[in-house]
Image 1 (cartoon, rainbow, N blue to C red):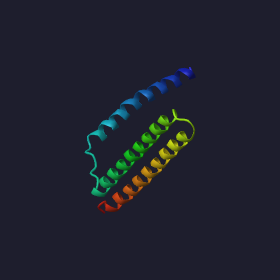
Image 2 (cartoon, helix red, strand yellow; image 1 turned 180 degrees about the horizontal axis):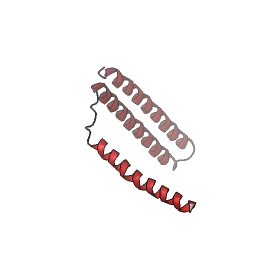
Image 3 (cartoon, rainbow, N blue to C red; image 1 turned 30 degrees about the horizontal axis):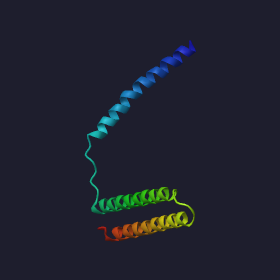
Image 4 (tube, one colour; image 1 turned 90 degrees about the vertical axis):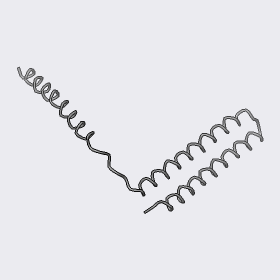
Length: 107
C-alpha cells in the first residue's frame, strides 16, 4: 500500500512538472531580446576575430607539421621549427590586434 501511494505521488508530481516547465519556457520566448551596447558589440567582434585568427594559426601549424612528417633529418627539424615560429608569430599578432581592437572600441 505504501509503495502504491509513493508511486502515485511521484507520477503526479512528474506529470505536473512538465507543463509548468513548458509554460515558463513559452513565457520567456515572448520577450524581446535585450539590446546590447555598442561597446559590448565591439568586444564581441574583437573576440570573434581573435578566435578566428587563433584557429587559423593552429590549422596552419598542424598542416605544416603534417607536411614535415615526410621529411628526414635537418630538413624535418627546420620545417617544424619554421612552423612553430610561424604559429607563435601569428598568435602574437592576433593578441596585439585584439588589444588594439579593444582599445579602439567605443566606451
